[in-house]
Image 1 (cartoon, one colour):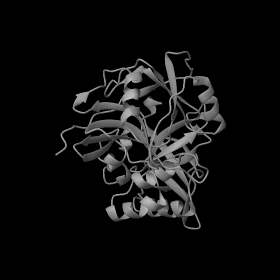
Image 2 (cartoon, one colour; image 1 turned 135 degrees about the vertical axis):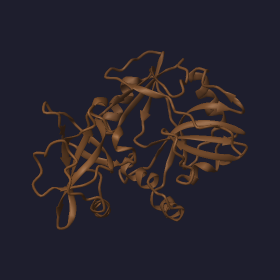
Image 3 (spheres, helix red, strand yellow; image 1 turned 90 degrees about the vertical axis):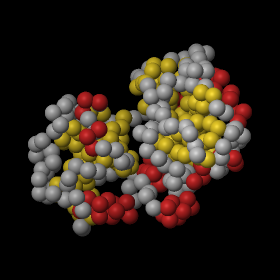
Image 4 (tube, one colour; image 1 turned 60 degrees about the horizontal axis):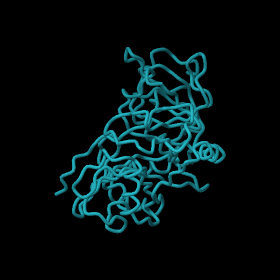
Length: 316
């Protein structure tokens, strides 16, 4: 049996500036799901950043002998799925990540193909190597990984500003900046890793919806304050949603309808609103916060399963 216990991954610190010079490299920040791969003598387990198992969801990654030459490893990376425009789509990859039935996974392998973008290695052949420099870890990673259609190594570049400009031009999520000599600090955030986003996003709680022709056409969003009250922060009816996505959302939300107002105060946009129990969470892309504490130009990126109580105003 595999004897590697799941760890909490290292996380980058948010930044608004771009360091440059030979001490820093930049990587594309992929809009996907963080997945760590634990392999030991051919047995493989996959876990997300919350240490929830995802082995069943991504069988393309579990055939580790097809792309990794080492006996035991812990790899860190991002699972992505490309949309029709060739760019990573969070909405698409969440269709895979949200599956709970192995038969549906088999179908989704064809309809929602994934790529595992590997960017770090923490453990190699029985030895923890998180205390080696990023440069050394990258060299080790390159020596044991053979890319294929589902497995890729994330490129690193020294042209930090140039990469961010390219990401902006392509309207992608952002970049991660890393010190070349940085260690991998398990379960911590350090300023050795920085993230610079092209746009803002937040995970919010759905507190209500409106209907058009008996299908949801807008959702009302909230975040919890320090008193545990759900504060209304805006509504949206746009995003990366297909007609079938809206129909599926309608079905899910109608199952949790309630007569009780979930928000601390009645939202301005409450006419014809149907309240729901605050159980479903959604990743929202937006331009900025208004002075009144609402999201400007919010749009739906994808639905993500986290405890609603973790969607906090104070984290913004």
